[in-house]
Length: 115
Image 1 (cartoon, rainbow, N blue to C red):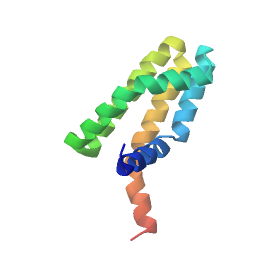
Image 2: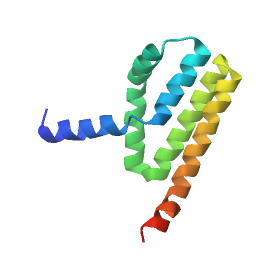
Image 3: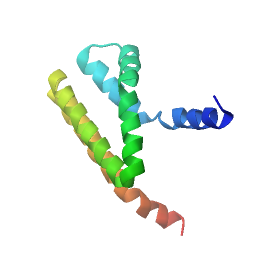
Image 4: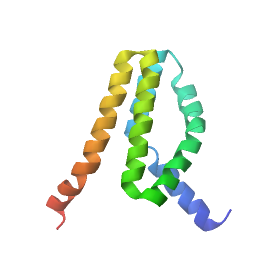
């Protein structure tokens, strides 16, 4: 493995961790009676092809294509979570909506502070 690949991979591994993911794992574990550790571990393994798909979609269609894919995966998560609990499914959908709002609003907020 080259130094560049190692640095890029380390950067991604640190960037991909976010409070949203921790919150979602907590919701899943709470509503399914499944271990937080097992949910995080197996969910990470299952997400690898989805992360690759998102990157390829971004390369071809840009941020809006990747965002659309991510919203679809969030809706898919909400459908899966509905099987566990309607409340968990709705919580997942609300989080997806806030992510979309954040992407739309953040450039305006940054422009207020940095001109």
